[in-house]
Amino acid sequence: MKQLTLAILIAASLSAGTAFAHDRWGADHSCSQPIKPFEFTSQWQVDQFNMEVDNYRMCIQNFVDEQNDAIDNHSSAAEEAISEWNNFVDFELN
Image (tube, rainbow, N blue to C red):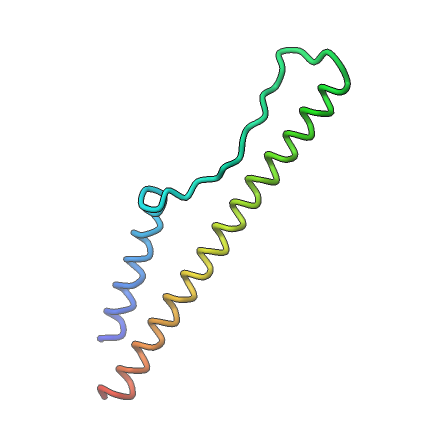
């Protein structure tokens, strides 16, 4: 019962933490959206804009990948803590 209670509390805190993580830590990307000209006047402008769009996409993708890596790390740490608690309960308290 103690194991289940702790697991539920940790899962709930992780769920609540992810909902408010942006507000607490202010994790935000520093990517800049390209500004599309009203009208392209040369092929160079088209190529430049397309390059800026690609850079913006890669910047956003890198940010998302970093955030997903952080989620994986935090989930692993939580799972390890739960396992440690369960082992303590099983071998020390019982």
